[in-house]
Image 1: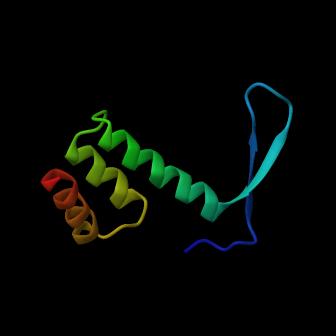
Image 2: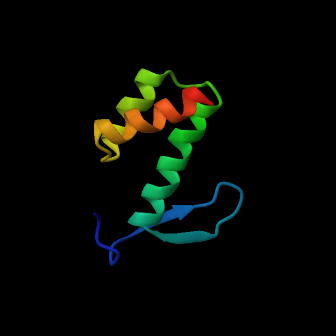
Length: 72
């Protein structure tokens, strides 16, 4: 788990506004992105597993999620 006191700075593309977000928020958005890429068919199950392992999930957790998705 990353400390909440460290923040990332993200600059929006179309404006000069700068948003400051926590590492946790960044991590959550990254995980959501990987899930969406898999559900929309952009990533294969193997790529999804690799991405989620890099984000800190256990292989069993990812396998359970994949089983649920593929059984629907």
